[in-house]
Amino acid sequence: MSTDVTLLVGTAEPDDAPSLARFAREVAGVLDLEDLEWVGDPKRVLGDGKDFRAWLGLRPDDEEPGLSHPFCVDVATGKGAEVEVGRRLFQELADTGRFRVVLFLDWECDRSTHFSCQDW
Image (cartoon, rainbow, N blue to C red; front, side, top):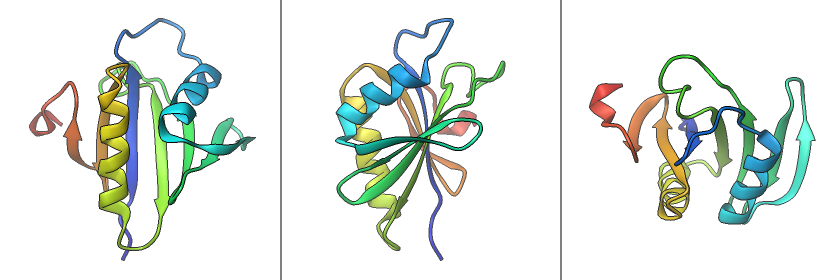
């Protein structure tokens, strides 16, 4: 059975009008995503990393965690590598200091930069 890997992401300095295009450019640079492509409806950005594929989307909400983490990064990787890849991507984003990040593995909070997972 594979593990679902999702990162909820917001900027460290949240703004009132989050832009998926700007977010996708920033995240692509941090995660070394290539071949960015706009897909689907609602629009999402698809990109390939060295050992994963990522779908980036905007899912703002008026409640937490979506309020401070309006972007979603869904990750697909090889079976058995999901936890390692998810935690690595979390750390790469967190290390920049530019993002608020929550890592969900099978929709259970694994780690977070700004909230305690026990509060979810």
